[in-house]
Amino acid sequence: MKNAIVIFFIIVLLAIFFRFYQLGANPAGFFTDEASIGLNAYSILQTGADTYDRPFPVYFEAVGDYRDPVMIYSSVPIIAWLGLNEYSVRFVSAIYGVAAVIMIYFLGCQIGGQKVGLWSAFLLAISPWHVLFSRVGFQLIASIFWLIFGLYFFHKSFKNYHWFALALCGFILTFFSYSSIKLYLAVLPILFLISRPHELLTLLKKWQIWTMTAVGIAVVIILIYPYLLDGTFFKRWQQVERKDFNVQKVAQSYINHFSPVFLFEKGNSEFPDESVQRHSIHGVGELYWFQAPFLILGIALISFRKSLKKNYLFYLSFLIIYPLGSMFTEVVPQATRASAGIIPFQIITAVGITEFFALIRKKSLLVTARVMVVLVVVFSVIHFFFALKNYPLKSADYWGWQYGYRDVISYFKSKEAQYDDLRITHRYNSGSELLNFYSTIINCKKCSVMNNPIEIDQKRKQIFAVRFDDLNEARERYPKLKFHTLERIYLPNGLTEIWIGEFRPFQKL
Image (cartoon, rainbow, N blue to C red; front, top):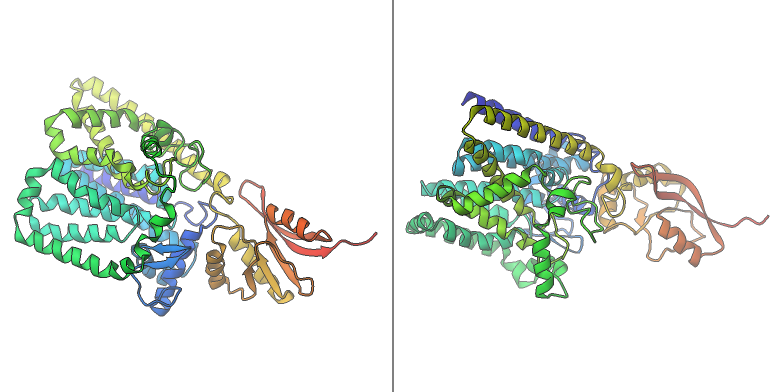
């Protein structure tokens, strides 16, 4: 017991390290979604309303759609403490990430004992998939924690129905955490009915369960009803749904989510035909290669061993349907929308590892197996650490975390008194949100996003922050003007990302 506590403490420290190490600088840059969460949380803190002056909304209008509330409201106390900045927005995600590691330990212990709990927590602590999203201000990380929370107390409610209230709270908060997670919440009760029919039906015989469920559903309906009426509730789905829907592409998308290239080799960002570089860490998969044999063993044992099937069939079923959140949107597997799969992958791998050691009867072989597994895991984690450390070199540009906005606004602020207009390129993903975020911090009143296409007023004193495509566009529209560079913003890999300067007439010789 004492050893288990020490191991658990080390796992939590490992989780903290991977989530807080260089948190403010890695990933390099700050994406629009993160800025939106920070701005709305700050607005709630300051005024009690969102950035559109709607008091305490359930869904927040931002970046062309509506965002779920849990991550935003969770950010309010942290921003009150640390102020509005990149670190405070990401700090919330890191807290959720560490909390999920702790919570999955208790879930693993509940369904399979302490060894499964410790291995599940360890695997989640070092998971490339989970670590990345614990380091950025994305909504999905909150949904992972609350789903694990809900599952843990739901399992406990099989023995004592009073725990169901906490399970219900966890599932409701999961519902309001992330858009794609809602699909899983609709299916998971069916999976429980298939995998644990006796326990579930026994639970449903209690009138208290029906009462709590009715209250929970009523709360959700009351909260979302206005957004159902005006179509807001479906806005995100309408944005990401596949317009050229066909069965073949959906089937291919499903298969791709189980591709070794996606899971073990390259992850989301380096998957063929993927251009977005911010959804996985380069050089590693979403899972480790060492997980593959234990994952296969876990699946086989759960499928054919009765003693394991009772406790883990639900998680095997969960694994089978994990592409659900993404398969109707893109052919390329999406680590974000299918992020609920993080949970069953770690638990089933933990079962495989635990049962692998249990199968070895000879003590000398067991010691050898343990040493080999430890060595492979250590080298894998070291490799991941260096991949994480080098991540800014490969993911800071436009298709990644869009590095440079803070530097531009800081430079503009230092020159604000000298210019009538300080214009920053529109070639950012919803750059107006980033402008609002950094203007709130740095207070650059004359800073604005430039027109599309670029417009230059020679009667006004103007300075521009542009990308290479803006320079080409300006040459075509204003052939008599030349760009005079005053400053450059460099990516972590040394390449120029932004040119800052003035458009001036060509000087006659």
